[in-house]
Length: 479
Image 1: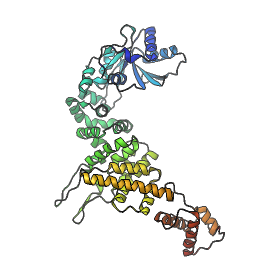
Image 2 (image 1 turned 135 degrees about the horizontal axis):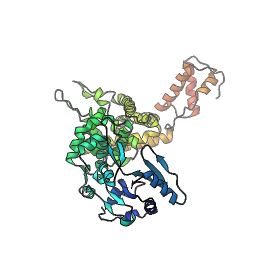
Image 3 (image 1 turned 90 degrees about the vertical axis):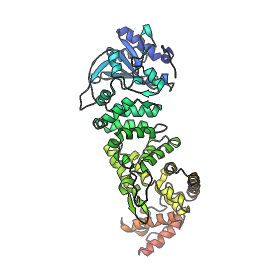
Image 4 (image 1 turned 30 degrees about the vertical axis):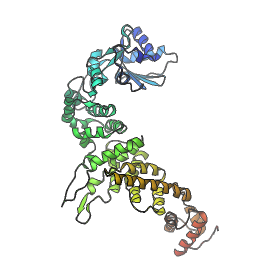
C-alpha cells in the first residue's frame, strides 16, 4: 500500500493536467475522488473510470475539459443529476458538482443542493471512498482525507464517514456495497456499521432488483464469494433477497437420521467453482443448483432423507428468481436453468459403471455446455473424506475421457438427425403427422443407445424397419 501526503505519481495521465487547466480557467476547485484514489493507494491497478468533483458546476467543467482536448470528445450531460461524462484515452470520466444531500424515507434518491468539498465527502458511503486528490494548481496531488480513510485502508476496515445508522437508512444500497467491498478487498466491516446493517436490513425493499443484482454479481465474481453471502445471511439481507437460498439452512433429524446443511454446502460449491471459471452465470448456477432441495425434502424410514426431483423443481424456481430480481430472461437464464436441471446427471454417471449410452445422452442433452456442467459437478464435491474426494475426482476424469471417445466416434454434441423430417415426408409421401415424429425419435434413441451409428445408411435401414412396423411403405426410396 502506498502512503504519502502527496500523490503526484497517481496523476501522470495527461487528462489530469487538462482538468487542472480547465478548473483554473473557470475559477473552480477540482478533485479526483473515490475508487481511483482508493485503488491507487491499495495498488490495485489503474481504473478505467474516474470521478471528478468540482466545487462549482461539474457540467461546465466537463465542457471546458472537452474544449481543451484536441479532438473535443463528446460530453454526455445528465442535467437531472447535475453530472456529465466524457471518454479520454479509454477512460470514462464523470464530473459532478460538489453537493450536499438529504433523503426521504421512501426513496434512496436524495434531495440535492450545491455544497463544499467537505459536504461532498460527507455524503460518501465509506471513509475509504471519501478520500480525494487535489487537481488544483497550488496543491496538485495533495490527499484530502477528513475521515481518516487512510487509517481504514491500513486497518482493512469498512466504516461510514457519518453515523452508519443514518447512512444505511438514507441509501440502503450502501449495505450491499459495504458487504461487496468487504468481500472484494478482504476487509472487515466495523462492528457498529455491521450492527446498523442488521438494524436497517428491511430497508433493502426500496431498492430495485437491478441494483441489488449488480452488487450480487460483483460478490459472485470475487475470489471467495462465501464471505459476502455469509455477511448477507448474518445481517438478514439474504433472507429478504434470496429466501430460496436461506431456506436450505435448515437441518432436521428424524429417528437419528439427519442430512447435510445444504446452505453451507452451496457456499462451498460456489467457492470451489471460482478458481475454475470466471463465468458469472456458471457461478449463479452454482449458487442456485440446490434450491429445489428445501421444498422437495422428505423423510421415509427406508431411505432416510430424500430430495427427489429437486433439480427439476430448482430449474423452475430459477425463472421465478430471475423475474423477481429483474435479471435477464434470455439465454443467460436458460443456461442457469439448464445447469440446475442437469446438475446431478454427471454425478450419477460417475458413481455407476460409465456406459457409452449414458455418456452419449449426457453430451446430447448438455450440448456445448457439457464442459460447464462437469465443472459445476466437480465443484459440487465437498466431502471432507479424502478417500472419497479422490475417488469422485478420479471418476470424473474417467467421464471426461469417455466423453472425448464417444464424441470422436459418434458426434452427438451438435447432434442433427442423419435423416430429416422433410426426407421422411418425401420418402413415404406423408403430410406432417405423428408418424414422422415417431420415426425421428426412434432414430435418435437408436443412435443414443448405440444400436446404430450416427450414419445415414444405418439410420436409413433402421427407419425402413420402424416405418414397416407402423404400416408405412416407401413411395420415393433413396437407397
